[in-house]
Amino acid sequence: MKIALKKKSRWERIVEPIVSRVNGTTLTVNGKAVSPDAIRKPASRALGGLVIATVASAIVSSVRRQDDE
Image 1 (cartoon, rainbow, N blue to C red):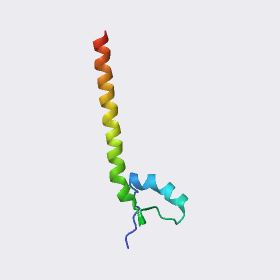
Image 2: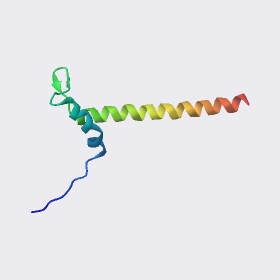
Image 3: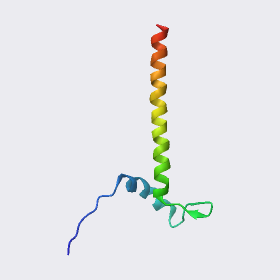
Image 4: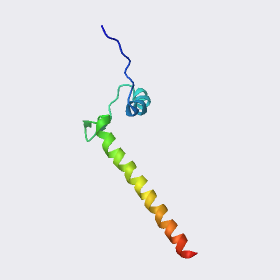
């Protein structure tokens, strides 16, 4: 018999406190249950888009500052 401890993924560590507060209720969208895997991809894309927009804004601000001087 082999016993091992499995390290939880970063996503599982983030979702676990939220799931424990919900206590058995299921998140649904249009009557269909939503899994954490279905939420992960759109959320990561939104976060990536936010980071890209912030970097682009910083570059534009930097270029404008250099033009003003």
